[in-house]
Amino acid sequence: MSAVRFTRSLPLLASLLLAACATGPRGLQIDDSFSSFNQDSRAQLLVLHYTVGNFESSLKTLTQPNPGGGEVSAHYLVRDEPVRIYRLVDESRRAWHAGVSRWKSWGNLNAASIGIEIVNPGRVDTPDGPRYAPFPQAQIDEVIRLCQDIVARHRIRPDRILGHSDVQPLSKQDPGPAFPWKQLWAAGLIPWPDEALAESLRPFYEQGLPDAAWFQQKLAQHGFGLTQSGLWDTETRKVLAAFQMKYRPARYDGEADAETAALLDVITRREGFRMKDGSLPR
Image (cartoon, rainbow, N blue to C red):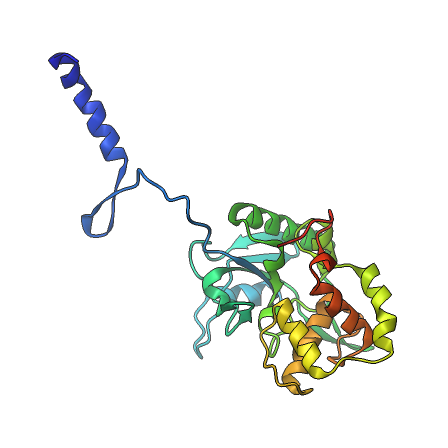
């Protein structure tokens, strides 16, 4: 290379070197020209909630300081009327939505999850007694689209799309028994227990139910955090109710029965917990 050509190349070389560097904190020059293959998203789970309030009260709770402490937030708020998605916290930052939570090997899920709050009053009193308010179909459609977008970008596994009641079952019920989890299965987002297999196993459990230790072991294998006491204690009944609320919402009293035992048996079998297309979620 001639001296003239080399001299003319110097500005281009310098610009390439500068392009690879970024100015970091306190004026540090950080070189971004290399990237490791060994990485993934900090967001490993997606947690769905309902707000227990209307849009205005929900927005205030999720965005304003609480004079009494205990502030909460979420990455997204999905309005009911009109249906609209609001981003309240950037996905790169931690939102305070999951509280003291646990799922499988994770604890305090705020640091590893994205939270979606869905405007819904939750449990309401009616002339026929208390019930859980339904979700408008247009709102559910938007929630599904939002979940699909988040999952595609962060590669969140299907078995890590959860409800608040999954990760905090002793004190939370949301998104509640009226939330149509099976629509998320139909949309290819989450796995679902093989209902035909569960029905075939039900007569076996009608002959005699397993003990509390069996139910506790199956619930823990599925992902719930609970004490393996071997007793039918309050904790076990609340966790069992959370499981029923999601997979058997017609009855979620926290009492052991043959149908619940069959569902737990199936959902903890590798071949019994599948996606809509028949594939395994793991």
